[in-house]
Image: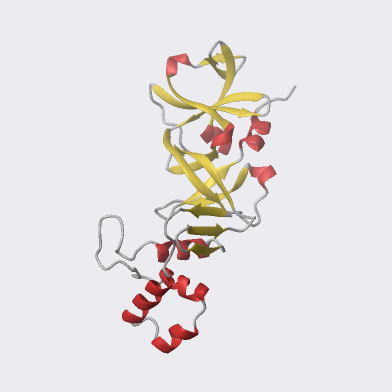
Length: 235
């Protein structure tokens, strides 16, 4: 549950009811039979506003219907608790199966991937001459500590891996293991919703789920804990 509260004057039931009647959303007879909860929920109707004059901040009647429809898409709901001269609380309830995390969006080849931010210590851009090789393993020296380096396209067995003079590096931490991952580019940090993928074994492929970006693109979420077990030799 997410509660958003203010200490304002509360929502005026009579003002909401009067505006709804004026706009033809309900009749006077219907208004007299409606409960306070039903009256308050009228504010979720598209274009509804009690403001007579629109400003840059309010009065346009957009927003609340968008909130409700998007929360509904996540199988959640919105409740309103309001008290005159004391304030209003909007409560957004989401399913327990829904997880929202901070993730780092990266690109390899033509594909974009999301990696949980909790598994990434830092991001770097290094020169290719900083990459060394020890007994066949690429390594980087980060603050006097030698860490193994892996190319994400090789871990995932996909195309990609831009060959240029500077590399984008993620310093990952999984338990007591630290290692580096090279990607083509770092897009940035985003808050994402994890959606499970039926039929996918995370322990086998290292994919914990997927998310949908703002432009409608499906992006796979990588599980570094699983991928690290594939590439690191635990001693």
